[in-house]
Amino acid sequence: MNTRPSNGNAFVRLVSRLFDVAPGEAPAVAAGLVMFFLLFAGYFMLRPVRETMGVAGGVENLQWLFTGTFVATLVALPLFGWLASRVSRRRIVPWTYAFFVVNLLGFAAGLAWSPDSVWAARAFYIWLSVFNMLAISLAWSVLADVFATTEAKRLFALIAGGASLGGLAGPILGTVLVAPLGHAGLLVLSAALLAISAGAAVWLHAWRDRNPLPAGSIADSSEQQRRRPLGGNPFAGATAVFRSPYLLGIAAFVVLLASVTTFLYFEQARMVAEHFPDRTRQTQVFGLIDTVVQTLSLLTQFFLTGRIAKKLGVGVLLTVPALAIAAGFLWLALAPVFAVFVVVMVVRRVGEYALVRPGREMLYTVMPAEQKYKAKNFIDTVVYRGGDAVSGWVKRGLDLIGEHPALAMFIGAAIALAWAGVGGGLGRWQRRLEQAERDGRSPPPSPATTQERPA
Image (cartoon, rainbow, N blue to C red; front, side, top):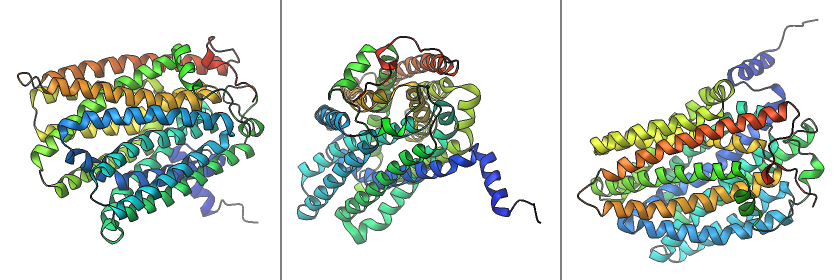
């Protein structure tokens, strides 16, 4: 009898060694890749249009759009909290994404009816900004719920590669299909992709049911638990954050990250408006930057991020990009030209997508289920968008001080250094919680580390 391994088995082993994936994990990784690919492809089809709408309303008015997004987030999050308290964890994503699908179809009808409406464009800009944060945060909540910390260090960056693939495919699809389908058609296609992405999230929960984690760990989440609602009230996520030093640290990290992002976003809008007055050229520039960012992010996620997290820890993922951005701000202060800005912007976004975001999500793997959904989404939406709004007004104020154009860049460098310091502290804290779980000890007392309540 031939006992030699088949070519198929050899290929599976090669892929497993190359990407550090256990054979039984391969289906879950594939489902996670599909979930992120479809979500990001749908979003990135529409993102260049949103950016062009923001510039068209006037760079000097961007802070109003950021403030409107923050207010809309304050309205949306209690509604999400109410839903998360009353439906089972495995159904939070399908119900939420279904609501977004209905929204997209409504916007598609509105664009078909009145394609040149300024207020419809502003409403869509704000809606897409809220959708972006909540939908992506929920996808990561599923991963933090389904995978244990040791699995997350190996697999999160690889699965996030689906986001980069979607970020590459989305702008291409938008460019190719906008002429035959129009903007309304793109929204309908995005709605279809989002619905299929929700199906992949449901499949991930089913995979965990068939491959349960060891009982007794923080990450343990039986099928019966995932079929129960989280309970609590719509504001439980906010109260959990304010009562937990660990979650407050994550919130501070997110505020600093949002501030750095906003400073560079405003610079991007200003420089693109100055160098490319034509709207078509603006959309092309935004799309080209997206393509470069997603390509570099994909390579980093597939081959570097997981190995860095496994060997050097989460803290390295959270601090190295921040230090690089601090240096980039100083470079911009000394050489405020478009080419330098593009380099800094690409480094910032690659660092965030390929290193910071997977590292940030790994922080939640040591938390119980309620914090993985409610507290996490409060931080990812209200806290992030609040940081956006405040830093947007600060950046606008600094821009009005015409005598010191480099002042905003020096302040941005200081914020990035503070971001690096908080990230390093969180990395050490996460390692202690993970070690406590591995040793079978209880983590430090905190409302955020208590076991979930029965429904």
